[in-house]
Length: 84
Image 1: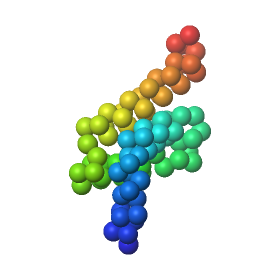
Image 2: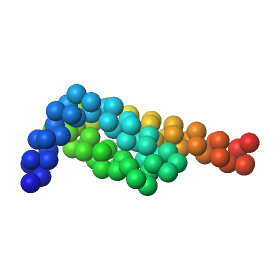
Image 3: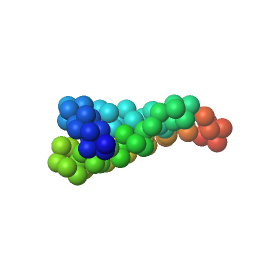
């Protein structure tokens, strides 16, 4: 069963993997979307495809970290009364 899922998603991650991981990191850390979007699952899948050689692990980690951190920094800075 898992092999079928992996093979089904492989073409999408091969072509759009970094974008999918970046959007997942962004949406998971944005207000409200983290509750309905499985960003962590997409990032884990990105790591899996990096382990199989379809993506670069360093690039996956950087994209996910930058997308998530940039989102949280922006949201925190705009919403925090201390930062104002």
